[in-house]
Length: 133
Image 1 (cartoon, rainbow, N blue to C red):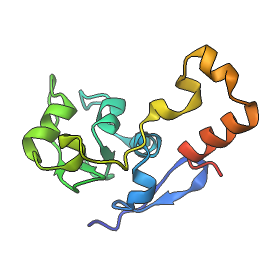
Image 2: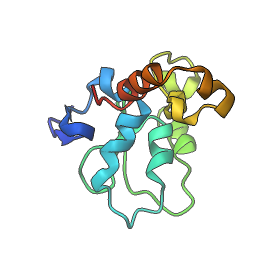
Image 3: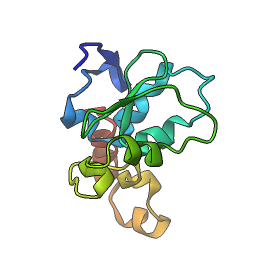
Image 4: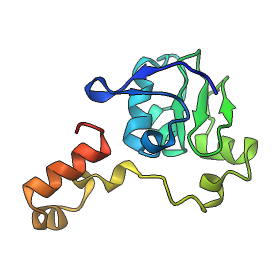
């Protein structure tokens, strides 16, 4: 594992491989803050596929299995690439129960569900997803 630390939201540092933080898709997405804009793959798609940015070129690593990949090309689909290079990854196989998708944040819930959640509970959940607490 690399020891390259990167700054995340609210000044929180996360070491690559720190699975408790990297289980959160929002944290993985935040790692792409300095991802090269020339890379023809969306950071949100990389984060959804379990990847976070390593801070080197366009190299990403899976929070679950640790596989790395770089050299992204136009048309690459992160989930397909992940399945190809690490077919036994629990996230790829659908066996991982630790991933916390960004869509679990209340701001992505349907309006009728969102209004049923108190603002304090909504704020607490949002903060936990993005490590703002």
